[in-house]
Image (cartoon, rainbow, N blue to C red):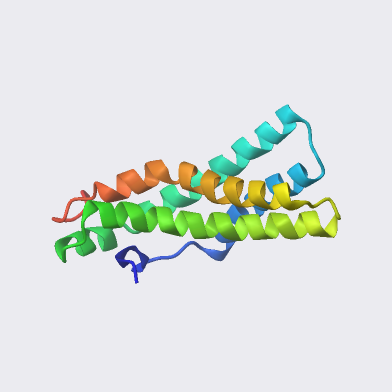
Length: 143
């Protein structure tokens, strides 16, 4: 088990918003939305993921400092946040693929795109909060 999973989790509302925004983007991609519209929806999904993970890292600062005191490296903390983002992105991709299946607009390339966009987009959006989480000093967070 990765040490980052100690402490608060994403709230259900934030989890559903994060997964839903990624799924909405992929669902719209399944119905072949135009390029600028798809880019706008993707950027909104990225902002939602970024905000969710920024809030999550802020809530976990004390737990992260404690993990660092017990020997967790910066890389473990960074990787743990990115792993959690990847799992949320994968859930969004699965939800988006389900929307594509319901619309009967699916083909093999769409599934590959959905997984890459869901997981990759979530990891990219969570990279800055993961970096901030990895910089929490072992002595404890500043007050």
